[in-house]
Structures are given as C-alpha cells and as structure tokens.
Image (tube, rainbow, N blue to C red; front, side, top):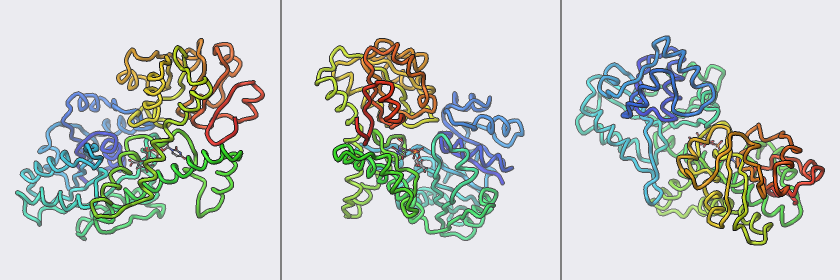
Length: 435
Ligand code: UGA
C-alpha cells in the first residue's frame, strides 16, 4: 500500500519505518530540510533502540523516502497519517494549529480517495475538526478521517509498534476501516485485537489510558510517602498488591514523579476536556497535584539532610532523561530538581548515558558535565539518582566512596537494596523505604 506520513517526529518516524518494514511504500514529509537530509542517510534525530537499523534497511530497499514536498508525498498515497506536534497551549489544552493547517493544505491537493489518519494525541472532537478543515475545498466522497491513537512507549517504540497489545481505530466509514484493517493485519497476526469504534471513543481511549497510567504512578508515589511515615517498605507493598491480577505488577514503581512528552501533557489536556464539558474530574486533579509535589520531595530530603544549607554544596547527578533508554528530557523531573538545587545555592555535575547533549542545550555552563558516571562523583557532597539506567544498578561502590566527599546517595528510583547500602555504609535515602 502507498502511505504518506506527515511529520517525522517520534511518532511519525516510528510509524513510517514500521509500515515500510511490512512491505508498504512510505513517503515521510517534514518541513525541516536538515532533518530530511539526515533521515535520507539513515540518521535518526532521536535515540530509539532498533529504529536506525530498520530505517537503513528500508531506505536500501527503497520502501521509505523523505521529502519536504507535501503535494508530491500525498499524490499516490491511499493513507495519509498526520503525526504532527500538538503542544500544550498556555492553559494546557492541546494546540491543534499544525494538524488543522496541514488538513487545510491537503484539502487543496487531494484528487483521489484518501484515508486521513489522526495519529497524534488529540482531544475528543478533533476528527470532526479535521473533517471540517478538509471539507473546505474537498468533496466528502474523496476522503475519510479516522482516529488511530498510538500507544508507543519511548525506548521500546519499535517493539510496541511491531507487536501491539491492541490497535484502536475510530472510524465511521466502512471503506476506511477496511483499509486500516489491511494495513495493520501484519501486526495483529498473533490474535492481538484491532478495535474498531467511533472516532470520539478512540480519541478518548488514548487519554484514558495515559491518564490511568499516570494515576497508577501518582497513587504509588503517595503510597510510598505514607510507607515512609508508617515504617513500611513500599517495595514489599508493591509486590504484595501487584500480585493481584486485577491490579497487575507493572507500572507500580514509585519515584520522583512521571515525566516525558505524554503523561504531563495528556493529563492536563484531559482535565481541560472535562472542564469544557462541565465535569469536575476530581481524581485527575489530584494526579496532577501529587506529581507536582513528588518532583520536589527529593530536594526536601536533601535540604533536610544538609540542615537547610545547600549553599556551596556540590552534588553529582546520575540520570537526566525522563526514563531509561531515551535521550528525551521533555518534562523530565531532573529539570525541576536541577533548578531547585541551583536555586538553593548548590553546584552540580551531571551524567546521563545518552541525554547529555539535550541537557547541555538547556543548562549550558550553569552546571558541570561528566564523561562518565564516576567522573561526576569527584568531591561531591552527595549523589542523586534520577533515572534508573541499567549501568547505575551495579556500580563499583568502593570506587564511588573513593571519589565522593560524603557517602550520601539520594535515590529517586529505588535502584539499590537497603541491605547493600547499610553494608557499604552509605547514607541512603530512597522513595517509600526507611533511611
Ligand atoms: C507513555 C505511555 O506509556 C505510552 O503507552 C503512550 O503511547 C505514550 O506515553 C504516548 O502517549 O505517546 P512514555 O511517555 O514513553 O509512554 O513513557 P512511560 O514508560 O509510560 O513512562 C512515563 C513516566 O512514568 C516516566 O517518567 C517514568 O519514569 C514514569 N514511571 C513509569 C514511574 O514513575 N513508575 C512506573 O512504574 C512507570
């Protein structure tokens, strides 16, 4: 099948590459020529395991190409995916200007039947808005608009795309549903379902899933805070409760709050959708509030340990990305924590296996940067662990002690066993476990 993907961001690129991998012919469009040129050479602008290998293979097989010419890209395509940014507006609602602008441009270009697919996370009712924008210059029988939200996790996006737990298609057209079913058939061969539903329900499903997951995290973060006060260990509580299949073991890890380009934005946007429909979504408001507070708690712990005097103290930071296996620092808790520590007069040396460049762009010479995890420890009054990268899990603790000025670890991800920390004589504070 011939496909066009508009927007070569995270979602667009993974979508385009994975559809090319199943034999389709994909043209990816972007307005950024630098990006297009890099992609033509097989160089991805994001760090995503497995993506470059697939991309290079499909470029070689001439199943994927890149252009800045929208008209050319959509000419022969049967399906056009819109994978455009939907940044938060000032009030937190999703800004649809890019999506609607492209829809209007398309309305003057299309001459044969196309399925236009909303792949970006967009609020309930967007399919109708896109339909209205397309209808400006285009006859209704030349297109259908469907919602097809993505459920990719950064870091495992290729795997999630190739083996989805489910595919959701929101469509009111049988013709469009059939085409979407064919396109996704290679990915659901093992029996994983494609759910066909109306567009509004599909749009809502995405927000419901992300907000529920964010709620799970906020619940565990509050549970951890209570465990600390009540002398319980959240690790045991998590395992004990997660064994109930109705709850499930996954996504119950407390920490320094959820981050990334999705949860913070989506929870905020769903809360606004609720307001728009005059519904007070009380749980969602709490999820937002808990996350805001959780990001600051590790700084409070540090303040407390250093008797409210962080001026002149020097800290090492391990992990800056919002989670492991990505270089993405959008809405990462590390950003707030760095600002709070700098604001309190501390100096910082930071290290992350892949997010260094992104952090450097943000903080330049306000902080120091290490070449590796040990370099930043030199003369530090303490170490903060903010992302649970595998390489931090089993470090050389003796070497760490030789480098650190004070043997103090503030672990925002519960990476180490309490016994080990006691044995090594570290002052160790984590989340939801005793000191
Ligand atoms: C999330 C969803 O998991 C995807 O299904 C969805 O497609 C995607 O958003 C999106 O809307 O595009 P992602 O943002 O890549 O994916 O990251 P997650 O793995 O969900 O983690 C989000 C945040 O939650 C991270 O900051 C992570 O550290 C935190 N988290 C996750 C916890 O604090 N505890 C956990 O147990 C799990």
